Amino acid sequence: MPVSLPPALELVLDLLCCPTCRTHRLHPGRGALRCPAGHAFDIARHGYAGLLTGTRATSGDDAAMVRARERFLSTGGYARIRDVVARLAAAAAPEQATVLDVGCGTGYYLAGVLDRLPGARGLGLDTSVRALRAAARAHDRAGTAAWDVFRPLPLATGVADVVLDVFAPRNPAEFHRVLRPTGRLIVVRPTGRHLAELRERLPATVTVDPAKERRLHRALDPFFTVAATGQVEHGAALTREEALDLLAMTPSARHLSRADLSGEAPLPDRVTVSVLATTYRPR
Image (cartoon, rainbow, N blue to C red):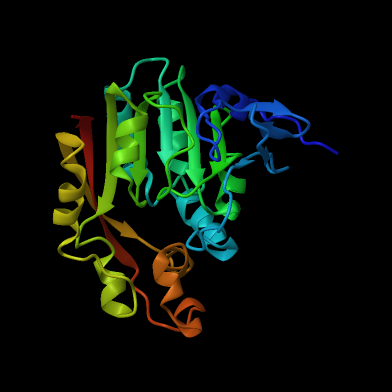
């Protein structure tokens, strides 16, 4: 039985371009999104659009990572980060804003922004279908679609007021293309102190490259200038279960042993949450 177009996806349908021919807008028809050239893309019963074609990305969160992420985020451990993202977006966007979240994961940060902007609509993109199942339920004004950030984005030019990139890969040229001239890019990334206590206990945990910050600004500089940078840093108490979820929801989970993730390893009961959040304006 064909899947009907989810209301949240209908809200952002005018933003989307066919990812195959890249010239036509998409429209709903017979349980899919279609373009006039005959290309069609499934609408999953979970509520997101499956726009990826060809070789699929394999780096997205798997089911275990998504479950751990949902459990940890529900504790409020990263609530201050979401509050800062929402505040920066609200300061940069008009009341009727269009917000694009690239690498949206479960939609946690996009939902926070839309809560702060009651007249806004959002679109979340991610490679992980497991994460998109959660993101499609995250907010009634957030449409979602499967897409790989390293490919040209399946959006028309100059349609977004805000692009969010929170702990996600970046495609500066495409971010610049889809933003309006008055739009803003918001990038959140960890500092070297982020979760330092976990890295001390578990050396296999992924570390933050000291050169990452320089590479970030070098990549963005041809397209964007810095408007403002803020920092979120605080200590967070953790139960053992929360510490395990924090490990299991990150790329570190792929580098840790079963013993590390099963509760046998010694874990800290407090960690440092430390991130930088920068707003960029297009050049």
